[in-house]
Length: 183
Image (cartoon, rainbow, N blue to C red; front, side, top):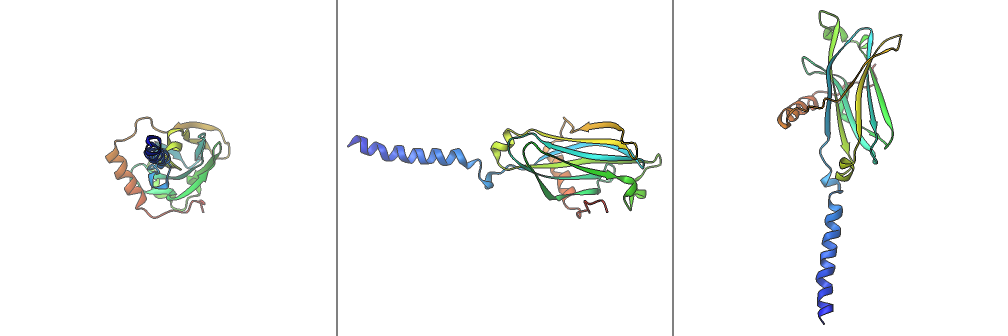
């Protein structure tokens, strides 16, 4: 009799434990995106800024990215509203060539530099994926026509505080998307 009475509570506890174990991986528990920023840095008319991202995690991710003007905060290229899936062990590249941008003149300073900040939002599929993630965003600048790499920048190790990140993200997300094809 005691064994029969004990089976029901043990079964209930097992169901609760099983549900709790997998609750962290439900879509409702998907973590907020990891926000990385790279820069500020400058490119001239003769340079291209290449945004690189590699997913060395064990699960696919979705990313959104943009270059913004370091002084005004205007999104110049990219779209933080448009996510792109990156499979585990794969990477993606985007080039920003300031010389071919139609409105680039207004963004160059008196020394012919274009001040930029690179932004990447990485959306992991679930909490377990976020814990085991290895995200590698970087920016490479090189001279057009020659292809010589001048500098490689990595995400800033000192992240802004949560309030600043919230304000920056809100400001970037309220801007209209730009053409990511570069045309």
